Length: 191
Image (cartoon, rainbow, N blue to C red; front, side, top):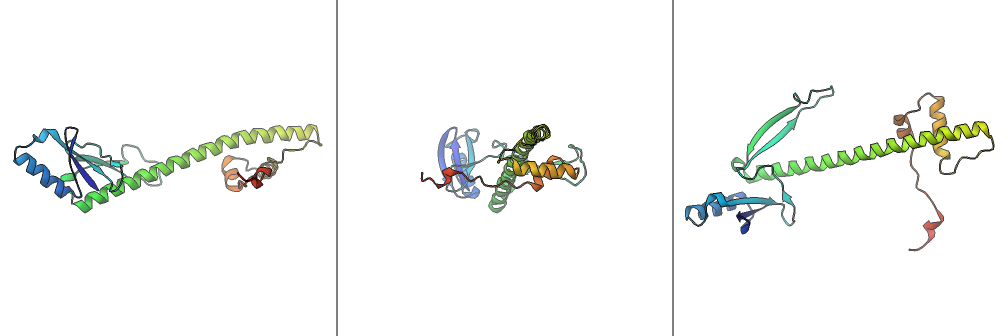
């Protein structure tokens, strides 16, 4: 991590460790070069422009929420414990571990959000496909010569099978239907 020391909005220095930052800060304050109220710092990942966003950089106390979850439905109030961490009391290794854990949690949360979006999109596609299935089924009843679109044949067959087994729902469709790569005449063209 890189620690950047600011006097108001002006950068005073960049440091490799919290200890070096604290030494400079204490030296500036003890020599009456700056007022301690004007000093603050930000933490950045090394060799990047990614700021480590901690909740409250004024007093260096940060709230961390630890969630306890079991397989049963848990009341929201019961599932949260708050713990206050004073960053000044952490060693550099502990601070790095804290920041690393925070990034991992944010990454995991982002992946979960993407999975949720993918599932919601899949449910919307299922909803549209089931409507098409019902329409095509009616058309087939009325006209036995009716041909189902080539793109929908496999889905139609799967819907029929699931309906026969009384399992026509999104979960069983989602687990049984495998999306195939679409092969077109454009695939052979050089771009």
